[in-house]
Image 1 (cartoon, rainbow, N blue to C red):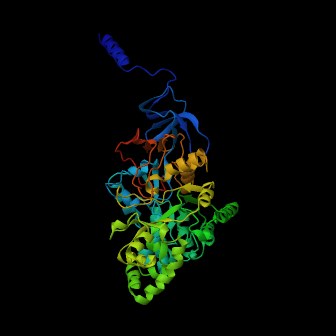
Image 2: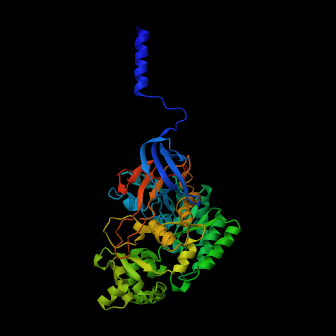
Image 3: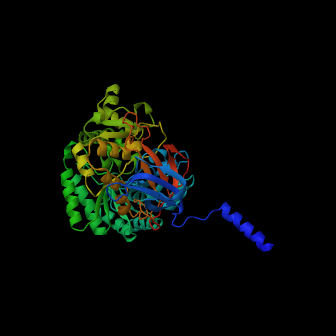
Amino acid sequence: MRTLLFLIGLSLVLWIVPSRPAGAQPAYDLLIENGRVLDGSGNPWIRADVAVDDGDIAAVGDLEAAGADTVIDASGHYVAPGFIDAHSHAGSGLADSTLSAARPLLAQGITTVVINPDGGGAVDLEAQRDSLSAHGLGVNAAPLVPHGAIRDSVMGMADRAPTDAEMEAMKRLVREGMAAGAFGLSSGPFYAPGSYAETEEFIATARVASAHGGVYQSHIRDESNYSVGLIAAVDEVIRIARAADLPGIVTHIKALGPPVWGFSAAVERRVERARAEGVEVFADQYPYMASATSLTAALVPRWAQAGGRDSLVARIQDPNTRTRLREAMVPNLERRGGAGRLQFRSYAPDPTIEGRTLAEVADEEGEPPLTTALDLIEEGTPGVVSFNMLASDVERFMRQPWTMTSSDGGLGPMGEGVPHPRNYGAFPRKLSTYVQEQAVVDLGFAIRSMTHLPASVLGLTERGRLEPGARADVVVFDPDRIDDPATFQAPHQLSEGVEHVVVNGVLVRRDGTFTGARPGRVLSHSAE
């Protein structure tokens, strides 16, 4: 009787849970079928399926016989690794519970952002990690150690070389940041206080990052002819990379303003020569002919910023110094192409000027543009968009195999200010304008610049490619709909055409709709 009952029970189990047929493929968490797969290497697309399981890419190929908890039909769509933004100012926004879902980034297909660029950002990376993780993240964040913030914490806004003790303190903070998982050192010798540092200071701190396998990313000392000139500024990055023995990145590479239009060819030769000599030199770029910065950074000489904002305001209010300062700003305004090429994007004391140019505001006030500029800077910190690049330079830089894609964008509340449209559209713009419309680069080349190249340069070893074992950051986009509707006058518009986005194996956007999931992580260089 017991044997009979056992056989009856066993037959019921086998009937309820049939055995898998011999040779059947396994079941996965997610299966993306019938897509045109771009693996990130730069190769042309292939027709393939992509399986995701337990947060990783489990298989790529013909998976017709496989099953999955969730199946997405990607017919007619491209499937690529999640995009990596090599230069992002989204760090502060991601720490805000109302913004940490990162919807403007996900709508572009961005799954990882590199934060703390230009030498600015958090000095205490452990505290930053806690603040970023507090509300969950829609994307991954890869932090850099910011030289300028470290210098400010040790020396303030002093315009001088560090003492031996101060130099050791800065090196210690870089070492602590790298030990906390940073991917390298960022610098901003164009900005104060980084502009007060000599090259040897950057070499000394970059050597600390190099000892931990990091990179050196720099907003170079001069993108025009403000001080040392564009070519010498690129040479400085090469010198630092060579001396510190680490990859050097000319971040948001450009030839800014009429005095250096056409200099992209000379920059290309400098980088190619350095690479031929064995120096790892790269660049990143956003696909626009306008930059964004503060009005102070664009027009005010660095000597006037020494000591910080209070000292700057005191100089503006002193009649004699104000005259000297205004005279020094004349060539800086010319470098930017004049007051009509500076559009206000943010200004807390008077938001009504946002979206208007310095020329328009000055005309309304009945004042010369530089008088208006000094008045505005005295009362606050105006942010500006600067229309200052030449199409042929943008295209030449974009064609280089050592140029990564970035946004240089931030993450703020939708509808607030008139920010640069790169906050919403940088990556789709490159695909729609520079791949599809103008054919500056081909699709595989563009995807590589957004995925495998930055992952390789920055040490994101588990990301940037679609192959078994890689982390499952995936984007699926419709080539017929990919678009960046954000404009300079109406920037608060999400990109279109990115249908599905996967971050660490979790769908965060499906069929063009955000799922609400926040599976992103603060990445650690030591763990990648």
